[in-house]
Length: 263
Image 1 (cartoon, helix red, strand yellow):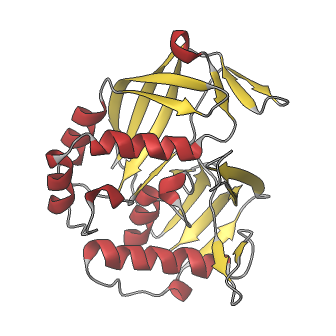
Image 2: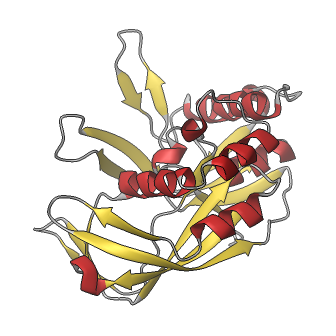
Image 3: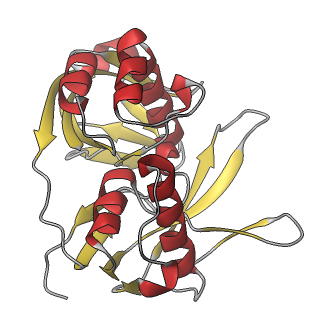
């Protein structure tokens, strides 16, 4: 289930300069808001069949970058200056049962900040709208709303971030989706990763994101923005749309939208 949030930019609080790398802070904001639900949050997780051992570890969601209509990129400062009074943000959750009531009730009028030690922006959630689900089919075209991260763990323990056109990428993406399906629904889908296909339709744009910037845990992660066609079972189409594609979806990667433009 996907939601469109309209955020008011409270420029009087801390200003209007957002760090260029802000996806990790978006994820933190979602977790903080969810955790405020306390008992309601635990009930929601239980109703939707997800067993994590710790309610705050729920990760079957994905989210877009902020959609900022008017902005200015400050290259030297590595900031985004928000000129708009409001911006749009999409958040997608895999669970269906009671999700609309829970999310709308919990997120409406929440206040949160996104930023770092240099600058931050305060946002007020002014509306939470449920987006109608798309019609899923066995062949669909998607484009990224946040970069897809495709991780490959080498034998020496190091991690490679693969191009979407790498021969290993399609298998890794679909194998991850099948694992996610088993984890959430408690059963296997009659399909394997090799039965699915991913065709990249344009030149992937690399995006290097810094997670936990200016801290001892700082990490750089590479993802790609691109457009692609997928052939897969309808169950996986819904899964990739609602919970994201690739790795680290709950940290700001892999949010997709349906792209109905002519190939």
